Length: 229
Ligand code: SIN
Ligand code: MN
Image (cartoon, rainbow, N blue to C red; front, side, top):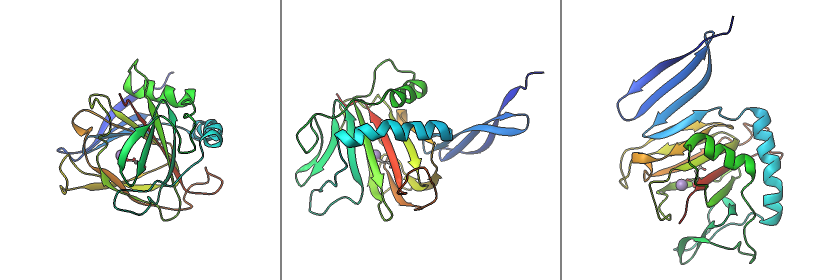
């Protein structure tokens, strides 16, 4: 007899936290969490899909090696990054923007097909993202609270894919200095930040270095997909 899947609301706390589980034969097979409007598809990618993504990223990293951007006011980001797509996100002493070229002067490689498939699956949009930012977090890397606001049209969501070590992700609302909540994200989780949450402040407190064996040298990769123009 085919097993029936049912949906269970596991916990609900006004605007801050919401969890919906798909349960099959008493076992949770998928959970969607909402943290301050950030929709997290837990374990959206199984381990084979995660390994396939890492393989798909190898040629991207060869064509467009990781770099450490400088930031306005001096200093460098602790995160190393690169991009795929029409535009890459870029920072230097003069500010934050999208660029058509990698700092070495060449265009960015194309966004690998399995990454575009995740975007399509979760957003249902025909329009493809213009940019896939790849952030690499080593042992002590983190990211301060910020809004994603360098894009032209905020009606398009941001899709965020976690690979490798666990990280503590922090989410606030659209006001600087507002209250925040944090959640551990694991390898294979995919988040969608759209609608009311599109301009919410978010950042990364820290990673749990060595918690995953997906990446040979440890650390965490985050892929952020965005429509830019
Ligand atoms: C970002 O907001 O740019 C990255 C978020 C993450 O690494 O999960
Ligand atoms: Mn961001």
